[in-house]
Image (tube, rainbow, N blue to C red; front, side):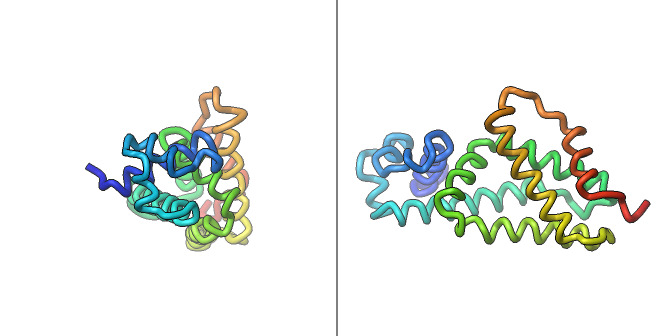
Length: 183
C-alpha cells in the first residue's frame, strides 16, 4: 500500500489532471485522498511546497513509466524507433492520460519545472538518432518531440473521441525523420 504522502500526491495529480491548477488546494487534496481535513497542510505547509512535491511525484512516476515501458535495447532501424515512439505517445495519451494532463497543466504554471525533463528526453532521442547515423540528429529529435507533444495535446482534447492509429503515427514520425541512413 502506498504511503500517505504518495496517496496525497497522487490525489493532487488527479485534481490537476481534472481541474487544472485552480483545482489544487489543500482541502481538495484531503477530500480526493479521503483523509481528514488538514492532512495535506500537515505535510505541505503552503501551496508552493505542495506544488513542488507534486512535481517531484510526477518525476517519480515518469521514471517508473520509463523503466516499465522502455525497450530492452536500441532500435534496429528508423521503422522500429518510429513504432516505439508512436506506442509511447499512445500510452501517454491513453492509459496514462491523467498524468499527461497533469504534466501539461503543471508545465503551463511552472514551465521551468518541466524543462530539464524535456531536454533529457530530447537529448536521449538525439543520442539514439546520432548512433543510428541520422544526419542533423538534434533538429530531427526536436521536431519529433514537438510532434509528439502536439499529438498528445490533440489526443487529449480535440481528438479525444478518436481511436488513434499507431501505424499512421509511426508513419508520420518516419516522415519527420527522413530516410533511414541504414537503408
